[in-house]
Image (cartoon, rainbow, N blue to C red; front, side, top):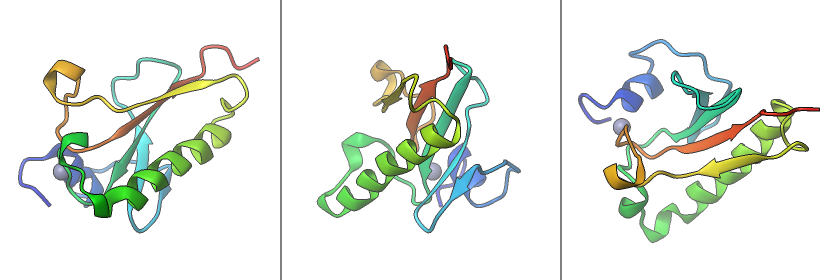
Length: 111
Ligand SMILES: [Zn+2]
């Protein structure tokens, strides 16, 4: 837990948030500033700043995040229409909250 990290506060329940999914390593909630009809964030419970800070031992965590993204795409019914999964890395890459998170974005056309 890192002081004044918004996502650490959400993960630890200091800021109320609705988790669409939770397991021992990560949670999923909706982006408060969505860029698409479906815009979810897959967030590890442990504070990791960005992709730049990943270590070898984090391989299973990152793999899990992608499998959770797949599961959530099915739950949101965007798996067939298609979606994006995206890590923004540091300011130049569009990262705004410096706690690792995977964007799941889609739902433009769910026919
Ligand atoms: Zn954090």
